[in-house]
Image 1 (cartoon, helix red, strand yellow):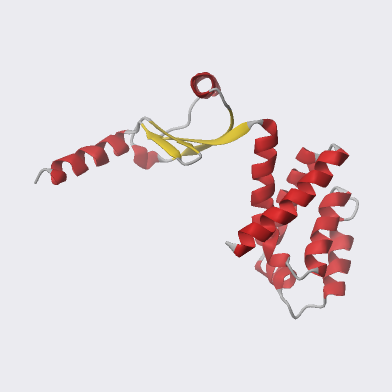
Image 2: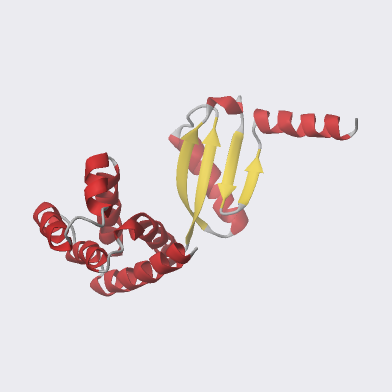
Length: 180
């Protein structure tokens, strides 16, 4: 919880700078790309988060790797995390930044999970109906989970609507065992 609060503070400051620079989306993408590059390789991640690695060495490597390839604000965010010995906050900072980015766009996350892949028209029609029904814009993430058997499961923030065959079977099972 303390790390989440601290990450939110950093993300808010970075978001404010990004907003002033008119580069909210670019900086979000850059931070996500850097996080992915660091997290995908164990050696790189260990180098980045290891407290025994000299901070100046980390800064030199980060500048050599990312300077000119990512937005200056994203690079300086990384360097600041290193200088303050807060490298482990990068993942949470990116998560909090994405939340701020969605809120700024007036969008909420929507996860659409289906048993098989939906066509683009089907997905678009479903999202449009949901946007009209809830009066919100959604940032859609689509997942395919064959274990659903059929139907769709929607997750909007902390709300879950389960119209899948697997979900209905689970409800039926709970109902049957609750009466015994």
